[in-house]
Length: 448
Image (tube, rainbow, N blue to C red; front, side):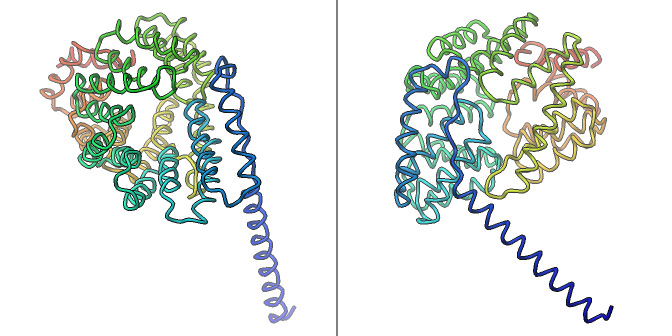
């Protein structure tokens, strides 16, 4: 065959291939635009609640409008907000975030500077762990409406995730000054918590609970977190009381059930703990519940069951992480979570790979630094762990798990004085630490 004929055929094949991919992209885009995201049935007792019926009616009314009136931006924003709230209630963030982003983008295509759409898209990016992108959008939205409390709340969240803690405090102060409510008080509580002020965190979360409507998901979330603050400071009676109240006000609330599971686990009542975690997992799609179940199975020697759950988590979370890399519009980054899961499998190389991937996205975040430090510790790279654990403690957090890990790292790296101070303090208040880690910490203290 002559070279000229060969090149002509090659060019024709290339044109056909390009045409195929363009047509495929247009078809996929058309499907995306036409995609309809029905409201899923809630699980358990949530499905029969009056709230669920009300949400279904609201959804049906909004869907009628958005499917017949392409110009109605108000209904699209309301529908996106409904999807976002349903994600919180059910834990099905992948599905409902995708649904919400569809309608938010439809609004932004018509009005690129639509304040509510920009703010919701920022919130969705944060939900999917696209923290830098979410923060940038929130900053853009603030230039449009600097006196809106909600956007300052999103800015608090984005700056915390990116490790800009001083800026997060400034945004929280602005938010409270504009609108002191459950959203602003709960953010103030979290900022106090990560700066080691547990009494202040408890006081602020009490204000959040009091500002909310009893039974609402946001109110009972605040009540459960208040219970958790009591739990990790050793006030188990108050912790349990708040979990029980949350369940009375919002029957079947998964996070309150999981709180009771943690209390049962701390008391080494493993059967009750597994029962609570399984119940919570049946109601809400949250990977942390499955991790808790796997942890309990491992502690009681049922390693086959634990390994099966961990294997499922690796496969599912890897797919989530892949979607986050492939889709700039929406897709969940799960590298930090995957780092811990791979540690459970013994694949420490993969754990480090994912920990560093997360670190490269947000190197100033204390939780990310803790993750990298702990992976290095498990890999017996103690000196390499030191700068990361130092960065993880820069806010003076008193999180018991963080402190226990820090003590172990300092001990192995040769700073026995610092390790002893941390672990001695931890021995007095060891609540909220997983039993295997606590055992390591107390054993290390005996050697110092």
